[in-house]
Structures are given as structure tokens and as C-alpha cells.
Image (cartoon, rainbow, N blue to C red):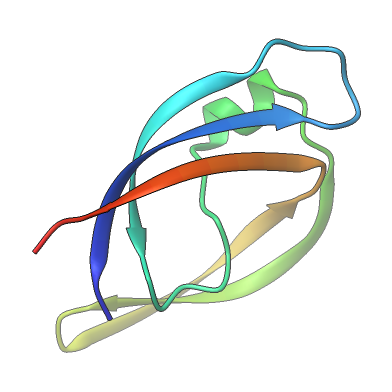
Length: 82
């Protein structure tokens, strides 16, 4: 798995709000997009479920319950960081 740096643009598909661009690091092995809670609240993304997620921090694999939100549309241009 690689980590790549990119800028992503996100919008809430349910609201008439301006898009915002964020600098991001993306784990190519991840199956979910993670955005800061402050951004999720600012854009009023609706919570759709709670999910147990696993973080791969070196040899220590932590788990935590996190809120999954919906109505996120994102655009990204990926640049490899090796």
C-alpha cells in the first residue's frame, strides 16, 4: 500500500454550497474517504451509519468506531509520494 498526496475538492450533493478544496494524504489500501469532523459538520453531511475502522499504525493496529457520512462528492488529482 502506498500513501499519495493530492488535493481533493468536495461538495455536499444535497445542499447548494460552494465546493472546498482540501490537501489530503490517501492510503491506497483504504476503502473509505476520511474527512475531518469539522469539514463534515461545516458541509452538513448526513450521518448514515457507524462503522468499526482499523488503523494500520506500523505494527500496532488500532480500531475505533467512526461515523460514516453520505452525500459527499469528491474530485481528486493524485500525485504519487514515494
